[in-house]
Length: 172
Image 1 (cartoon, rainbow, N blue to C red):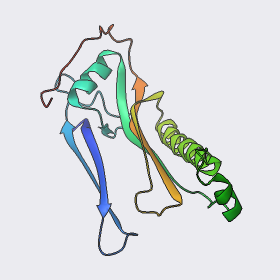
Image 2: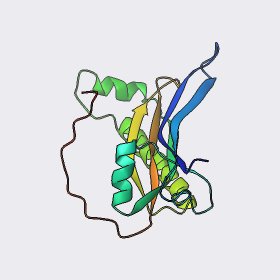
Image 3: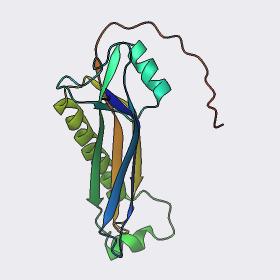
């Protein structure tokens, strides 16, 4: 019986003939804490999930924190098309397109607040290893998608002081 799942990787791809059908796949490695099985489970007794690697998990736990859950937030935001006059007035000029700037800001804020709400729901005191992605994936030219994910964490003890050190991955 696992205490949690580390290295969770979430992938999605188009499924079938339509752009509207997506397949989601989550892959990770189940782990068990040998010294005290069950001690790193979530407060409700469920196994934790985390996108952090095994090495990052050890560092996190040494600092006195434990993972709770892999959390994410997503927002698909439609950006209004600019009018014909505005387009003509900007033609050949290097200018900001304020509707895109505002769309990106609003999409980011909504996605981040949704990720934070998931973490708070699970009793987290923070989110670590946050990654963000912005694209228009399959939604069209006037739509922006903002995706944020990370690992929700909670404090379990004081931890040990960590001395930063350079680490070179084996796949470099």
